[in-house]
Length: 519
Image 1 (spheres, helix red, strand yellow):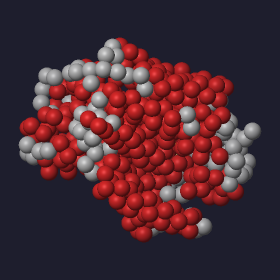
Image 2 (cartoon, one colour; image 1 turned 180 degrees about the vertical axis):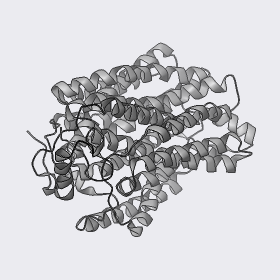
Image 3 (cartoon, one colour; image 1 turned 30 degrees about the vertical axis):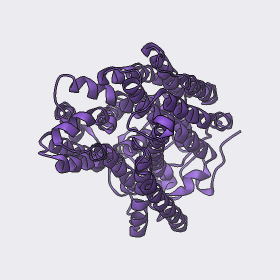
Image 4 (tube, helix red, strand yellow; image 1 turned 60 degrees about the vertical axis):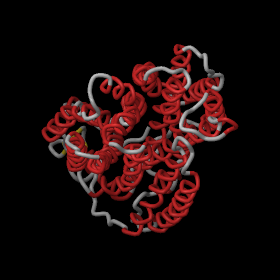
């Protein structure tokens, strides 16, 4: 069975990107983007372990300190939907330099921040760069990498998506055990500056730029829409449960604004003027991938947040130990992702995603047996199972979903994946924390500490939701080849005829004529 297509996905198979003299340079560009993305994504979960120290040093409340993470996620949710437009309007090089410059500037501000307000601004500037980097990475990879190699390359991207957030608490705990919180940013500065300098020297343009129009109303609707969703979910996920009504209000505003935003995009799609083109969902495989990745992202972020709290509040371990317990799962995902990617290239997604959904669900069910006396090694084993299930899901689903899109929809697909992961991550955190808090205190009263009963309840809810991934992945089929149409098809044909002397990367023109392939 092949994936269903909209009229925009019909046509003759496009020429594959050339594997020639530029292949080494292509891989250098992709590796540079991977390293840069890893550095910027790592910062998303870096602050969680540092909250107690920040409260003491900056003399702020727990709610204020939590804003250093909430504001980061809010900025991502607001900026990522706009990146589809930005990547069509501006060149790869400009987008990369903008992303790494913003991240580097934000990191520099944070290292010298005199107080909470300046540190919060620094986190927002950092997040603005992070929001650009992940969609840029996906769009570049699907323009440069031949269809038969995409699985292994997206496997490496999955390391960034899955491992960087998991390593955040570990890295943070290790740094805070020997230095103060400013070193969280000082440590990142050499990597940020190095990536920016190397990118300025080596990044070249890939894909097609065209003078698309920015719809201001779509931007206005996207801010309370995606921002309201993440903010509302963040309030619902605060420990102690004191922000329930404000959280519901923000969530309601977000849902209404998202509905209006989606309606506006459907109208604008008729003239190719959408800020976030929803015709991507006409692809059956992309829609299935988004649905399953949403659930998997909820499990990933929920477990990353709840397991360290359980280890500290219930088992009484130090913060650095709770961070280290997450590390084996992150390392497993890093080790498995390239092998999973190569397996996808050979046989497709089904032999990976079906076991992945089963392993993820089984692991979450095993965590419903966590108690006050559970050994730390059993907690680590449970997290390893969850990590393996996520690794088996992320790479095949994202590769398959993105490969089902035409080149002109690729940048929008990247933006949608990034947006969905942020909103789903916030939903996972809110779900796991709010459920655990509701069962935490005497008689069910919410408190600032989690208990074994609350943890078991949270993982039970997560396990039930994870069961939905099983019927979803049973419907997944390998994406069929798609081709560019209209202007993109004409450009691809011109590229095939004039590849000598007119290309910069694997037959990808500098400005026009996006190189593309299906899978």
